[in-house]
Amino acid sequence: MSEAMDALEARVNRQLNLMRDLGNELSAIRVRETSPDGAITVEVDGNTKLRDLSFTEAIAEMTPHEFESAVVATAGRAAHLAIAQRAELVNAFNSELAETAADGGHRS
Image (cartoon, rainbow, N blue to C red):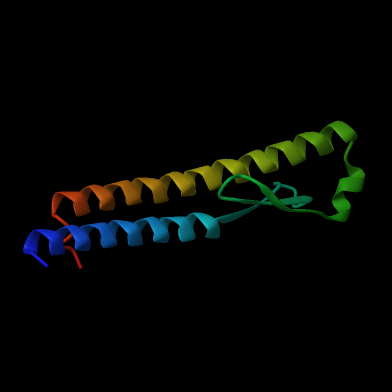
């Protein structure tokens, strides 16, 4: 193969590996958040999909409105943190992809 083809193949392989890594890292995101009183714990994934929801006996002392507000607020904080983690990974991916394109795939 010619040098140009070798360089192209190396760049494409590096970019493919970056995409696979990003997919794996995004799939691995899990965020657990607990309400300030410890009564409610929420876990979401990188797509902010609810993965787990647990309660302590402390919810028995809450009014329905307090319970609803605590669940929504806790889930909202977890989702916010998951989105922030996702954004960090995507930004790092975009930076690496740009560097790979700029240097023709010669990074190790």
